[in-house]
Amino acid sequence: MMNYVNVQPTAEAIEKMAENLRSAAAQLDAIAERTRQKGNFELVGDAASCVANLMPNLRLDLLVVRPLREFGAS
Image (cartoon, rainbow, N blue to C red; front, side, top):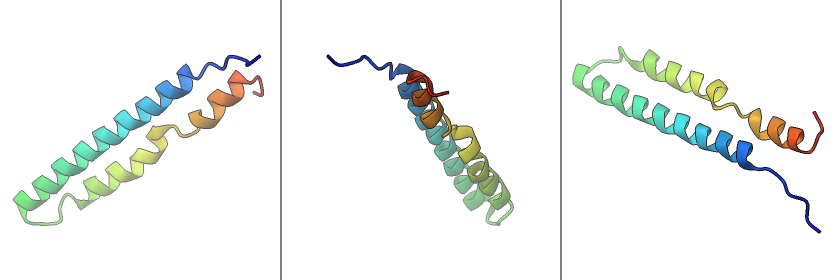
């Protein structure tokens, strides 16, 4: 007999990560376009901030914490 594992919260966390990645990609595309329009490097800091803020906002910890909770290891 196979035990049921509730993967729904983890799948939802992965979907949220994908959503955050798409949002960051759209922001970076917009920054690139505005950089071309301005013809200078003024917005490079905005691009760097977007990328720097991406990793903490992805919540990679949920890929570990949620399965551990599911198996009662937390």
